[in-house]
Length: 377
Image (cartoon, rainbow, N blue to C red; front, top):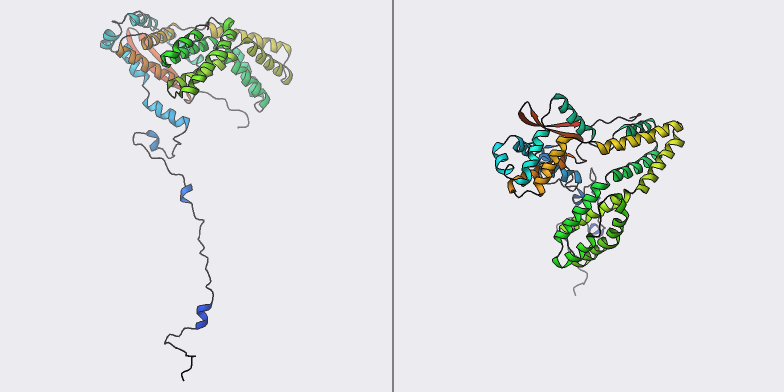
């Protein structure tokens, strides 16, 4: 009888105990920390026509400055349009002298740019001095106070509030013009069925100075803005109307801040802070008040015939002229002037249209702004 216990042996010298032992998992150590590829910032694709691709750094394509640079690259050059107005006789005869709107303004412009050496210097000084509202004896005194105590954040806050009120106060007329322009653009883009009720509300506005500001604000805030809000919420209009409404809201805020009461309160807060926190006497406060009056009067009475005639010419050409070629040139000149005043440009832009000894020419100057370094920097 065969036994049930049969042992089978192979030629492999394997130990049966090894097969039953648990396997030891070895840890894989890396010399460096592993990088998650999903968290790596991918460089933006560089457009060969984009000048920023030549730099060593990749700009954020969503930044406001980057968008401004791209817009600036595509913006028209002021000198090109100005040379057509001054040096291209064919363009002048065909597009300006035949236009009844532009002819008289152009002749006035040509006579205003006949300048000698002293007048050229005054023309450039006028542009440099009026590149900002905050110039004059009063603001020179404020700069001196700020420089004497540059780390005083409380004074900076009081000064910032006053400058905002001053800017709105002296720009009330331009703010009203901008509100009127925004309302016209909104009305032009509204559906026909809504134009009549919108015009009825807009006709209640009276732009005759600060006397009607309160009444205008009441109409704008309680009638026109709620009407436009209901229109946007129901119609979901994502077209140009929304952009014009945004500009309108911005100017409504500026109009409200331009009131005499706001300006008087911020001025009084500024003078009180200077009186009690700086080493000045009452005579200095009175001198500061008089310098503000003189600065305001000088700013409201400042005028330059050459600049005024040039602005009137391009404004009429861009809005009122029926000549499509001339209107296109005026619009390009206007766009270029607006870009040169952008806050992202760290330069002061000045232009010089000139008739010097019966020779027409045009030039531009870009001058770096001077910044005084604060002590300790």
